[in-house]
Image (cartoon, rainbow, N blue to C red; front, side, top):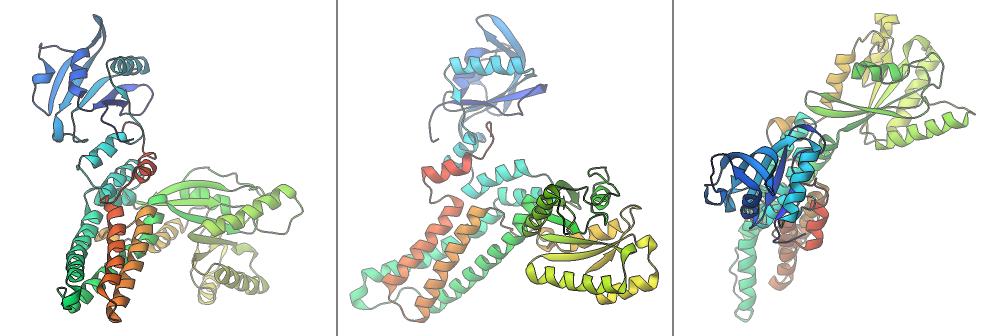
Length: 463
């Protein structure tokens, strides 16, 4: 992917629209654009200042292809850190193709996925974690994921890592220096200060690692499985949450035979609701497959909504329900379980009070009448740690970063153990170097072509 060619790609989504933007980047970008662009005012764009706009025509052999607006960015004053031209043309797919093909004939080549951002990284315009945040920002579809991506793109995460790495590097230099004077038995690195630094690094790494549990679900949407027996109102609840007729509602038990998924943003947090097949004993082959999928979705879910038809409650049913709830809690101890009693409009106040006292984490709703749905949404939000978001703390959402942080923490703990047990400087130096390596992997101070290829291949072409 690393190349000095001049590249071109459509920077806006493919298809017809009001306008389209075609991006060119590379040493010859302005020279190539000048061969096909004729300014209305007769200006030579190769002699114009950076960050200027020019109205003109794209012309091939005297034939005008389109009237366009050309944006000029010179050298390091561009997104990629090299000469860049953006051509805003009319959004006809024919016009887009004709201009791109003309630029290819003039010496450009088609950009690879993420190649513009890759060049930005290689030219020092951003570090690797910031570059990855660009893709997250494009993919963000709710306020929380957008906020996290923006915070990372502004360098919040990489600045924190870079500061720790710099402090560790300073001590590493002193440790390495001691090796040069091993025969004289001198210590240049203050062991007390070094121990304090390792404790601080360990604390920050653990906080960042712990944040991944929140960040990952916010980035991808928090999966919520709606489960229960057939005909208790699961599909009606899904429709009430989404405020649309997404799932088929019927009095016939076993209507939902496959999982139905849809997304909803509540106060900026994305939730993925999964309506599952009713759990019961059945000889229907198709329905049994649906029930099997239900348990698979419970495994994948972060939150489980266990829906109960309150109109069918008896003393025995309540006792059985308590056993079922405990069974689910024991089987999935890491998952949040919320017991929803549907058809609350048919329940007495005494029964509601009794159930609240017997079954923890219980809510009362009427999916059909849309009662209690706002309380349910509030309960779902309470399960998400939004405090870190409100305080603008660094939250890790990238699995690659998470893996490097875990490995760095392991090496730091090795160094701490060595320091406490008076391990020789040369052995500690090995673990310090390894920790520095994993820090560098996050920000891009340590890279290879395979790593860059894997990261930027997931970008869209044109970015």
